[in-house]
Image (cartoon, rainbow, N blue to C red):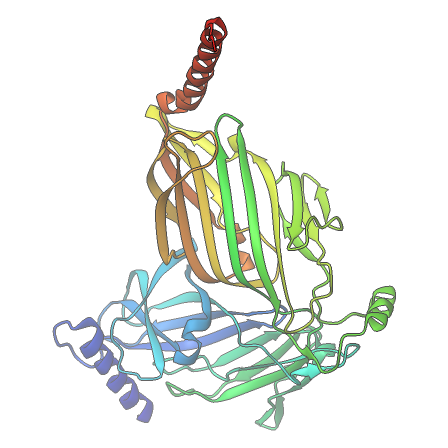
Length: 468
């Protein structure tokens, strides 16, 4: 009875402040979470949580919206939210933040279902959330030869405005790396259960809405926490050369455990020999498209010759090695670049319309990007018709980029975004632009005319007789 009253109050508040629709009965927007299954992945330098919810319409009218909430203190740390409807055909659903919310410390989202769910009907939805900067080193400092330990703290129950009958949490983690975790004793049985690759919590009692009880896991993690504070990405398109020249400039930091004493080159040499170095950036692997060529790696000093390019058709990648090991709190900046064949990424339509499909980001694996700018420089005389990206763009700038041998300058579109992770490298940008045959011939014709004029002037000057 208590839960029903709380739920009715919450839904009534949500209806009054969000939808602002005509008044309905208290049973109008009632769901019940029959089962919640959360999978929390702690194997990376950021947290990925996938929540599968079986929901039932316990109201008296069809429903096509589900309210989903998260703690406001992690709102700015969310890199991506994807919601799927699990049915015969898996459908991506729209999820939008509510303009108004009755809560002060909770962010409210509205998930729009693909169809209305009738009373007593069930539906299963899957919510995937990537959260950055929530893993903290504990202790914050260590000796050069010690292991790195991290702590994760999160909600014991999936935060919801609806009552939940039962819930399970699968925390992906190697059992030999676990140091300590939240423990419970329910019905004379231990909770959670620690398996080889999972820590499993089971909660069978009905969970009231808005429960914010927390749990923690303290574990060993001997990989660096790589944060790319700034990525400046530039791609120059050449129709005449059938080429895409890519240049990525990275500002990298290791947000892991810091050294508590001065760095020892002797200890580092020993660690390299025995391969016992911990939580340090010693190399970075960048997966590239097949057909990549002419790779290079430079930093503030000059060319770095220790990089390794592997042109395997099935797994093309570039391994870059900083000049020094990057421990927690240390920084490293570098620029890498390569060339690609344009015809593999470009499609020509009628009337001089082109569609360019290129990766939004390309960089190391298991990293978090704080700030990203992507600059696409199109051929001289082209006109941008549309830019399509599934990654949210915070700002877009269209300008003219001038370089040698240009007459009117090249069209440039610069896209800005922030707080992404490496898994977004599978997302592409689509640039639709107009580039007529006349514009394509403008530069060679102009250069030919200029050279002809210079030749003519030179010939005339030779024939002139100048007396002093």
